[in-house]
Length: 289
Image (cartoon, rainbow, N blue to C red; front, side):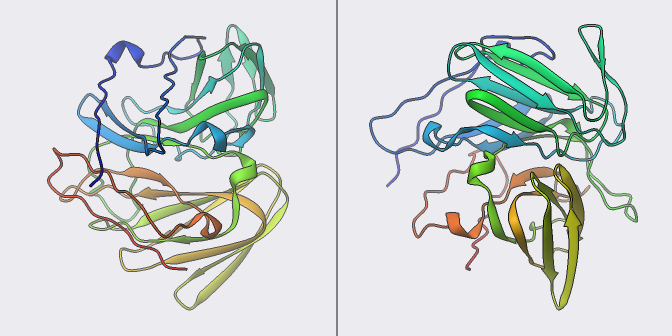
């Protein structure tokens, strides 16, 4: 039987925007362990699996939900450094190309932003545009998280989108990305929006049912497509890509959430599942290659 330990993190550890802070937490265990963040923000919550340090690197590409112009809504990503004097270069990708002002300097789509972080320092960026395709290159190992402060995700032909929900996921580094993915549907939702983000020039083919579609991506390019509650999607790419899932909200069954989909080469034959105790229901999606 698995042994579960809860660690309560005080609200003062919540990151600010555009500010270098010492707010990273390092967890070390004597045996292999899974670490899950379950994050509360006001009346919203989301969770993320934390990657072990040995699986981190220095190069990342960002995936975020589309900006929805709701109260409290900011598209955002955060970086945490593990070593001293870590130079972090960020090449922005904005959609739409709305200027972002940081410390009095205006940045456009394609602009480069540079910061230097020391051990366990963090930095968070927000914007009112989709930041998907933003490229991060650091001089040393960093951890990267992305999401949205409180987003509504719904299909355009539906009015019942639920409340806005806090979205957060840790992003795997580029050297941990895959070429082939399987995306399951999200239970009790009207559908799922899937986003493919590519660090490289690549041709991506996705299969939904009997339909096959091919998309050509430039470096830092991305595209979205959707599946219903009863569909499964399979994507195959010439070069490694990042694949994220956004469950649509529902007035009756819950608010939206975000998942980073693992590639098929990362599948294992044994898992420990952690679920929160105060949710009305939990479920597991089992994917077989």
